[in-house]
Image 1 (cartoon, rainbow, N blue to C red):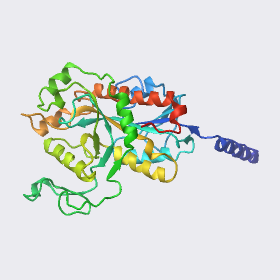
Image 2 (cartoon, rainbow, N blue to C red):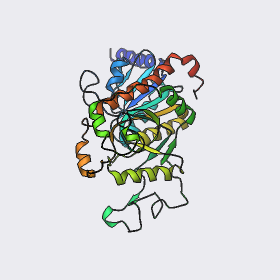
Image 3 (cartoon, rainbow, N blue to C red):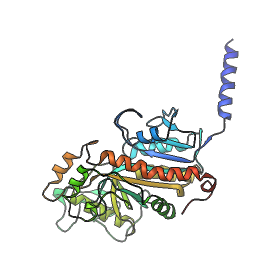
Image 4 (cartoon, rainbow, N blue to C red):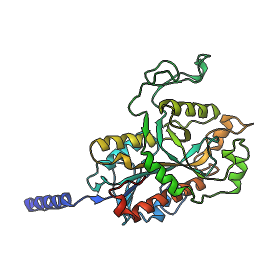
Length: 343
């Protein structure tokens, strides 16, 4: 009897292993959820689950959260907050034999802080450059030499922004510019949510772009597992992105997970599991990355508790509205986009 049971289990495992992997058209990458996947106060995942009918659940104990998929080839993954969780979750997904990700497009869609010099609350920014904010050296602010602009020093350098720049693996990721531009032009006229609270807050910032109603733009992102905030650190972010991208990137949004996601996708691409040219990063502005005039950085940070950002829900809505325009186009035009990346 025991032998029959063993043979039965062996036959079941063979049958399971013989199942062809599920072809995936688009992977939607979200980073956090506030509660359940449906029916309560949303995080970055919930609108995708509810509105795109990601009803099929795949157990995913090797990652942060169970996977969800619909019948149109759209797969949703929730990575968890921070570069470590995102890197581990994306690597686990990329190596999962249940899915064929070789032709999949990847859309990272999440909220972020935004530089008021570039955009307003509720805006949506497509990144071409994604820059790592954690790799480096740091001196405490109280011990910075008087002639230094910042206490952050690039890895393997001895002073801030030392030239010549020495590229370090994992510092910068340059996404497919043609695909990024295509996504931007496809979505630049998407209507975004505005409300009175957002209008009142942006009046406190003198920058022209900060005072505009929400809009779609191209703008690069800085990933750091430290949630930093303030006018001086925003200036550092601008300088850091410019330095590490060789002057080609323009910092607009601050995020936490994108370089972890891209590091895993880079390794997976080397293994032939994914196509790195099919990756897009969209960040939407839930809050400004700094205080307004007449306010301290500490006072501003105290107001920016998770879920309490002035544009929290509008930014989540923008991530779905703008991102879903791209997802819908890719799915409906799959015969074309399966083998030909749009640009």
